[in-house]
Length: 159
Image (tube, rainbow, N blue to C red; front, side):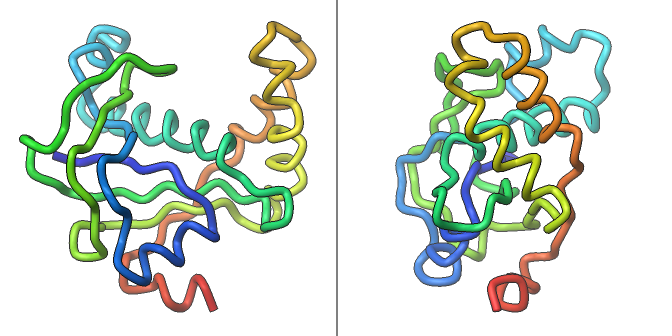
């Protein structure tokens, strides 16, 4: 099953080392996501799950690190993944750790997105409380598409 893990640039260092220890919160195409996107095809559902992970990445950003959302796409056994209540219909719990061998691609904001992503990170709490202006700021960051990297580019990405 394809899962999408929200992380950060700093978090990618863990992937370069031993990977991510489980259990993990992630995003995937779930029954609830299929219901939410009744007209969506498989690619649209995968994109929605990935976008949910990108949004979750905003909550993980360290103000001292680059303001770039990061999503790690990985293939794991179906038995490791269970839907869970969460902020998105794609929310799942992964029972085991994810190593570099599971990873199929990395998705990272371009440097040009950093200002919008930093503003979105700062506006999250207000957006959560219903502030429309703050939500507009968060949506501005989500308007940036993440760049795609093959897992073999991890070391170059971090260097």
